[in-house]
Length: 316
Image (cartoon, rainbow, N blue to C red; front, side):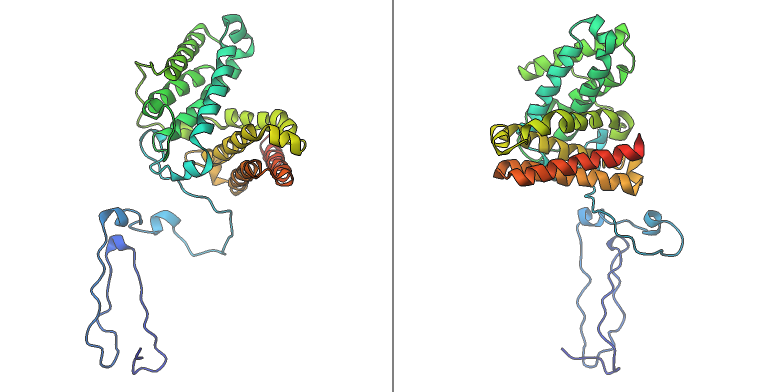
């Protein structure tokens, strides 16, 4: 390759944001070079990825020192809080684990709403936690890349679970009535006969309507009641292999879900770090169960417990 007659100059390409167009230098100042390549052309789908003005993203002012923070995969959001790309969820939780977790939460919900007296005596709290956990699972279904049951009804079920769950802040007769209606919806859904589902609010976002506390209670359940007995020794891990895989995938899902930009706490670097740690530990736990690696399963369980302790120490 020939160099410029101007000693020390190298050929430099400057790629500006493609949304403002590619600018080509008027002259390359290279002797004998008579042609330059035409500027590249990009599809609109590629152009839309880039911000038209980076200052609107990073803000005004001078650059500060470089910070190294845990890597988080951004999930573009679509209408109703559903991600516009579902590949990340497929990598974290299988369709079978989603189905299993919804059935698990359905059993808790049915028990909490078995009688109105039980509902009014604390059942409403359990119902709320179960409903909002299911709402989070239904929220990712519409864009989930892979086979998963109930995808076509996921938006309506997300809306129904979210509404009923938030109404369970009280133990009123109306709240109980709405919960029993969702119990019936879930039964019909699993029999393939569900109908008259509500429309998903296109303006809703996860952080607005699905609070973190119910998801943290699901994490605590795993930490305190499930992981210890299921991973106590190699035999227990082998016996509970499928359950541990589902548990690990559910926890990885929770870590990614609460890392969504619609949750206010995501702006806190410590919180983001704990959420990312939970994703990794959940994935490690599921993989350890698949491999039958008891030592790695214990290490993943310990990491999950540490994440819980660190987060609770800051937010309790």
